[in-house]
Amino acid sequence: MQSKKDLYQIGEVARLFHLSISLLRHYDKTGLVTPEYTDPNTGYRYYSIRQFECLNTIRYLRALDMPLDEIGDFLHNRDTGRIQELLSKQLVQVHKKQQELTVIEHQIKNRLNQIQGALSAHPGEIFLEKKAPLQLACMKKQLNPENYLDLEYSIREMEQGNSPASIFLGKVGVGLFYESLKAHRFKPYDFVFIILEEDDPIKGQVIHIPESTWAIVRFHGSHEQAPGFYEKLLAYFKDEGFAPESFALEMTLIDYGLTHDQSQFITEIQIPLNPDCPGIIA
Image (tube, rainbow, N blue to C red):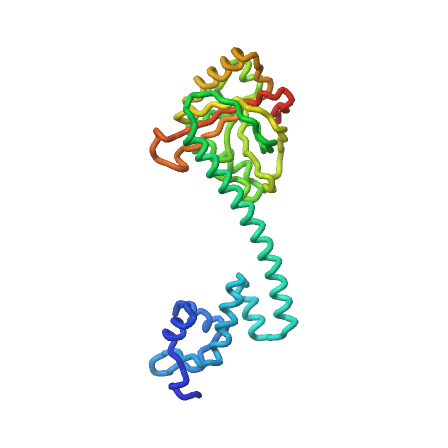
């Protein structure tokens, strides 16, 4: 055994490597890094410089998000070919994570834009907006939600078999078929939908909507206040000589998911003016 003056107590090693004492004990228990000496009387663990090299290697590989079992395998079977193999494998995982983060970044930016647009809108005012092509995942289902919580079960149904990342805050809504709009029948809703991002790997029925101009109205409140604004949109269509030949989408842009203050709730209804938009059918 080395002289104790050449050994370092577990607390000192934890400080030097910015690790917790419990993590060092875990490394010892699993055989990843065993202390040079454990005092039989006090149970104190002591580490030598020889363990420092192992701990530094672990810290480096953990920074690359490499699993501890793979790190342990390398430490006990060191070989340049093996570390090349491990690092190459980890590089693939890093690239995958970068792609996932890029998608999440895009989703967050879209959500921020959606919130900012909702907050800057003039409630009750109808306006036209040209939108880029949309992809909707749809499920035909009659439902009569009073708030976003009433959609949760339907969302979970649509989530089955898909990545949870595909179901993102602010992308979910309800809709009405053309037949319902024509009959001025606004409850119950005819379908639930998710607006898909370009990279969303979702399964099931997907509707592709071309670039279109939409008539949009935003209002304070949630789904229970919507019927009056559908009537306002239909009156606008009649006055302007348009015809709602497709469907309507309705989303709460700001609700309980973002605030407890119901006076801040904002819901949006949008109907495409483009007669070439496909009908949404199941």
